[in-house]
Every structure is written in structure tokens, then in C-alpha cells.
Image 1 (cartoon, rainbow, N blue to C red):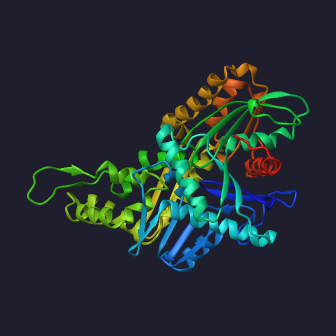
Image 2 (cartoon, rainbow, N blue to C red):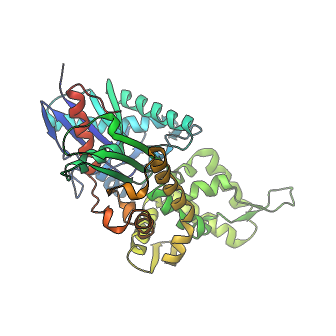
Image 3 (cartoon, rainbow, N blue to C red):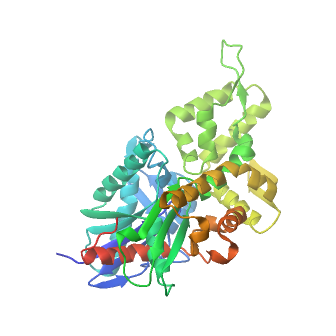
Length: 428
């Protein structure tokens, strides 16, 4: 029986892999040699055709080299709880969501095995505190992950909540017992664990509560589209169908996909694409038609990824300044807009409220007041957004926040979970 286990932090935006191998822990393995940080692999799939796939940094490189033909998928993890989303079609080949996740996990597995020079069939994989607020959808997402892991060749898998894994990593920094709130703010989810940490030892009873919210960085990116930028791509375009006097506006089913980085790529699917083409033909004004033409250029010239990268840049810019100039200069999609921090805070109110409802539920289910928490440890880029920081400071006080977040804290805890498993103790 092998004592080797992979530890996989499969993230919405980035993924990392470590291992417990031959009795030793291995931190983040260098899996993507084309990335600036070889241990950090972008969670990207690029299919130039149905029979070929590129991953991580090479996915972006090949996407650009091949004139942005084919299909680039990002944030596909966020579809897991959506029971109505079955997958996609690439040149008449059906690719289910489980296939997409399984293909990516298999690539992580193969690269890790090559580095460790051993085949490994056991894995500890991180999971959000909640894939969805709906328990049925949450269970469905986990079932899909289990299926994808089997497709990738794992015969034995343990799923560990990501904020609990982060707690194991932060335990290394303490010398006496403390009640710690771990906040893991990723691309797709915001997760919280309230845990009693001590320098040595772990018991499942030390986990006081786990909760979260299926909203984080991507949800914040989407507010720029939904409140301002989607109008450039036909979200408000009006049209009149033949033989009808009714003036219609682009349906929410289309505009909602347009708003989200994980969903917009699916506007290219045949039925939706043909519907948008009909809307363009029946557009009420030249301006309405121009906006839809801009959408076709965005889709056909494969500008979705760079456009949302520009939105991400704007979000980061507003974390450091009171306003920021959004600029996108691809031919026929030249867009310039000035955004302010005040607008961002206002537009993001619903997302912020949902995130902190998850945190407050975590405290409430543990029966612990914010004043009883000794330390708040934060990981993930969204934790650096100023209004997220401000809310945390209101609840816990600035002196309790440890905000030097880094990508590897969750992985480090998953590797430790793998070592527990190797020694006969599973983390639940």
C-alpha cells in the first residue's frame, strides 16, 4: 500500500498541488514552468480543437499564438452547483462539466507524478465551505467533484474545507491556544472557519463552525459589467420581431451570462448565438445593432479573457485610488470609462452583505461573539479589497487582523491533512 497522497488546492482562478510522499511533506510542486511562479497554475483550459487541450500559462500562450481561435475556459469551477449547466459543445463534441474538471485534475496529477516519479491514486482535495447556499446544490457540486476526481484516476479522495486547511497552516504561527477565524476569499467563494488552534495536535472537536458564501472575486468583477459595461455589448439593446408590434429588450438569460467571467463564454453555444444573431437583425436602432455587433466581435475575436483581465485591473486599481480609468482598445471595441471607489462600494453592496452573512452565521453557529475571537487570519486576493477590510475591522478590530495573505496557505493545510490521513486520522 502506497503512503503517497497528493494535496490539491483546485481554485476558481489558480490551482496548486503538494504531496505527502514516502513519509515526507512536500509543499507546492513546480508544475507550470511557463508561469511566473511555477507552483501556481492558472485554472484555465484552452481547446484549439476538440482533440487538443492546453493548461495554465500555456493555455494563454497558445490562445494568443493561435489567433484566439477555439475555446478558452476560465472559472469553470463556479458552475459545479448549477444543476442546469451540463457542459458545453466543442465542434459537435460534448464536453460535460465533470469532463472539464476531470481533464484539469488529471493534468495536475500527471505533472505531480512526473515530479515525484511515482503514480499516486489518493488525494486530499480542498472544497469551499459552501459551493452553494442551497444544500441540495452544494451536495450536487460535491458529487460532481467526486466524479471528476475518479475520471482523473483517483481511487480514494478526501475533501477538506479550504478554510479548515488554511487554519492548519496558520497554526504554525501560534505558541498558545487561541480561537481563530480563518477567512479564505477566493475567486468564486468566500469561506470561513472558526477553530480552536494550539501549536500541537488536532481534534475534530476543535472546529467550532464552518460556513461561507458562493461569492467572492468574480462576483465583484461582474458588478462592473452589470452596472455599466454590458450596455456596450447589447444588454439594453431593443428589437422588434417580424410581424410584431412589441418592442423587446435583450432577455436577462443573455445579459446575465454577459455579466459573469465564467458564463460569458457560453454565449457562443449554438442556440444562444443564433438567438443573438436574430436580435441583431431585428434591432430597433443603429445604436442597438452596433452594441450587438460589438458583442459578436468580443466573442468571435476571443476578447473575453483580455476584457475581464482589464476589469480585474480596474478592481485592483480602485483598491489603491479613489478613481480609476478603465480602458480597452481592441479595434471596434474601444471603450473608456472612469470608475470611482464610491460606485464600486455601492454596486458591490449585495455581494458584500452575502459574504458577511456567511461570516456572521459562522460565529452564530459556534455561539462565539466577535470579541471572543483572538485572531483573524485572511487568505486570498479579495481579502485586500478595502471595503472587505473595513467590515472585518468593524467586527474584530484592526489589531486582530492578519492580512499578509498568500496563495499557499490552503495548500499547506491540505498537505498536513494528507499527513494526518497517512497516519490513520481523517479530517472531516
